[in-house]
Length: 182
Image (cartoon, rainbow, N blue to C red; front, side, top):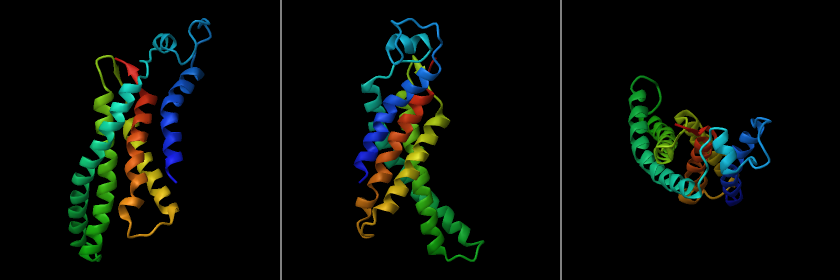
């Protein structure tokens, strides 16, 4: 079910920056500077999109989100268990809730950080906030798709695929939309 969504998001990572550029194109562009071309992007102060860089950002984002998961889940669980000492919630329930929230936050932060540092080069940079917002939107979309999928609860890894697939895509889109020349 989430494969078409992933395809749409990857296409959006390539198309949306071009649409945003086209909306801000000054009228003085010549016919040789067609929006979306390298010449038009450089004239507008945007570095060109490269498929190799996008692929590297996606690959790094997948690795970063796994690292973020393994850091965020235990930190969140510890924070949740610590909250149980000052609230009437049982320790186990608050530790599990904290672990889930920490895992989601770690996935978003890990994917965004990896995408940002791989995409940032000598010639271009972008907004880390936009990259993190894109990863957060990917986590949120993955949670919604997971909830709508109505699959068996025991198949956690199957259910978690959208949550694991979409944050790097969202982070890459956020990076691409906020990119600029250094």
